[in-house]
Amino acid sequence: MNTLHALACMGALLAAGTFVAAHPDTRKALPAASPIYGVTLPEGYRQWELIAPALEAAPLDEIRAVLGNKTAVDAYRRGAQPFPDGTVLVKLAWKQQASAEFAAATVPGAPTTVQVMVKDSKKYAATGGWGYGRFVDGKPVDEAQHRTCFACHEARAKAHDDVFTRYAP
Image 1 (cartoon, rainbow, N blue to C red):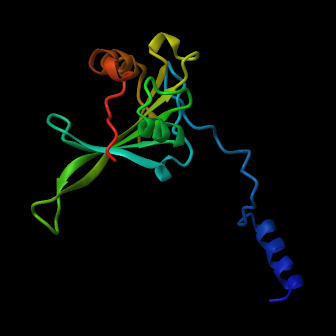
Image 2: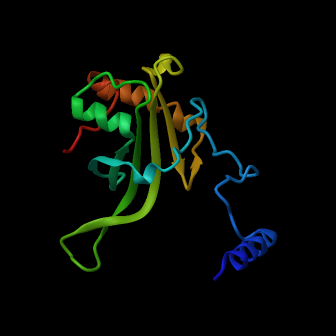
Image 3: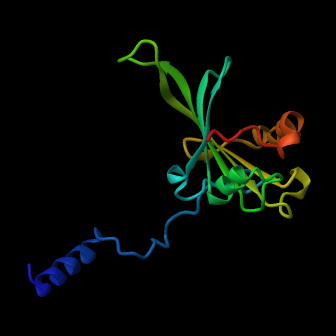
């Protein structure tokens, strides 16, 4: 294909609205933010490093994986606490399910929630420096559920900067 033909094809795609250049779509809706904290699902979080997996017993019966941005991973590796501002942790959760291929294995079933913690000691000074977001199907859950986040973390993980997850190297 010669250059002129390639340019003509790109022009046709642009005219048809099927070619997306490197520019973001400015008509795109902003991501939904959690009540109280204004936390959103971070862009690209599924490509972040694994901090640790976890199993949650009944009544939730979930498999969980906690991912962290570079600031979080670096802090965990250094053993730095409190975590520095800019730390973001994302917990993915799925129902536990028996593997169809290997009876002794438990595998992720239906997704349940994605939970986010964002460290900003000024913005979230009243909640130990952390902002929280809990999402189901990409949408934040109600304000009542978000009101429970800080109290639970403070009561159970205060000695670890309100973070439950330990690093699994």
